[in-house]
Length: 118
Image 1: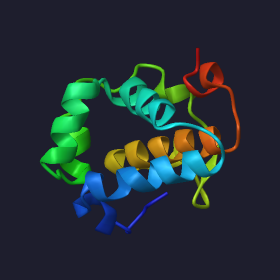
Image 2: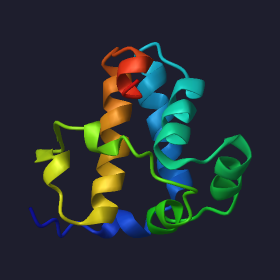
Image 3: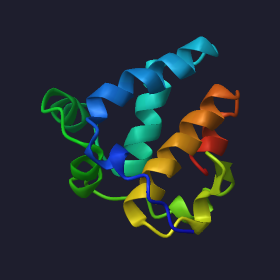
């Protein structure tokens, strides 16, 4: 699958982060759960995530500077935005969609241990 929508790569992660939180909170979930998902996926912690938000880094930089992508990302499967995440060829877009998928699962009420592939 070739995805040509790369506008998101240059978007500030800080501009989208509150949308993730809003989506979760609207469904009775918490900012802490959103953060836990981000920490699990990227290896960031509270301080390093806050630094990325303060610096208003774009998605590309956010994922480039991530301490480590979780080794279990291959367990994230399914459809997000009409694409199967496991079939997305562009690695950066795939990482962004992994995050979208996990936040989506949170908003749909899935248990955290299932979201974090524990």
